Length: 546
Image (tube, rainbow, N blue to C red; front, side):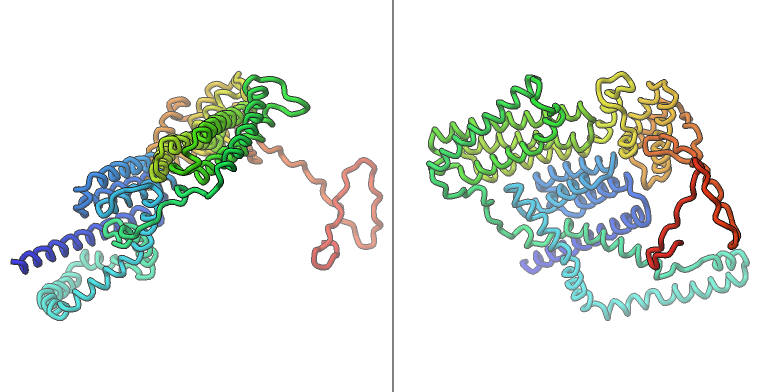
């Protein structure tokens, strides 16, 4: 009975391994067809969805684990964002989700920091897993190789040899078949090498999710050091918090007077300078404050149990939150003084994350939460912001804001920076199309059309190939055509090219021809006021005139 059960289990394991092999081979062929020598577009998201389906079908424990299926749904969300607009951030988040789905049936989730380490270990050990599996498979096949080779040869000998003889006879008797066979050119083995390399790299990425290395989930990681705290005397912590609160109160009072109330700044300092110089340094100050609370005031310590210290910490965190709010206001004032960019939007999101982190640090101290609790909440907040970044096109948001607030269309912002809009590429297409319908000045309209035409041509060329087609660019192209018509107007011809902002280059001034004199002729006297030829340039090697 035990032998029958063992044979059944071994047969099930071999069948599962064969299914994973076939699934990996299918994904390797699909990936090589989609990505080898091709542009990457929505095909990246399609491949991610195929990978996810293969994981769920080929690995039964994934389907039976609740946490793993939640990770599968998260991975499906990021795969759809890759169809919308492929990018490195979306792919990284997809890899994190699908890697978690592969590991969760083997180990329950504990905290984000330890889990990130396990994902890294799974990737590193997974590179060696195909080699180990290949060795094990080779040992099994060696035992059966001699008998299998003889059986296969006996079965295939007659159809192969007989079919080749009949094809040769028909090729000689039928000119159509002969011509057809003459056109067949066998593929060069050298040309297959790059495609095999791409397929192998795809296989190395896929196999660790189908067969994770056991060591990646068995490894035990120590608790993060932030939960231990530093042996700082209570009196020192108390004096530090009193000092820090006093210093922060002076800074916040200055922001209230000049930043929030709008009072005139002393000297030659402008509001834009005041806003720009302090935004990021104050965020660094808030981070240092949070680090101090983490390292010197762990929950359950003697210092954290003192009511006076807890009140000082709460007051200091409140002042840090006001400092972060002032930093966000500084950044926004700088945007209004100059313009909005994707990096400045990301900076505002980062400041919000800092504020959330400070609140969580304070709550962890007051409520006695663990380090894992703090790490998981911060990781969740960061994950939500990153997921939103995958969905929202920050470049498009910045382009539309700058266009709608530009002075050229009656806004209160700064003048248009068409060079920046050109740098945004497809993200600025709909904003430029909207701007083109509102501007009536001929010179400016011509420059806008020149920049918009270049971006439109790029998007149309990218969308013409299904490999580089993306859902987001399809919507951009449809919106631009709806605003400008099926055949948008083009800019005037600029024979000498245009600058990045669409300004045509001037025609170069004609250079007067140099006079050719005989060796015996005297050097002519320069005419006053006439253009003079340039002086000879010394050679960098000999110092003689060129």
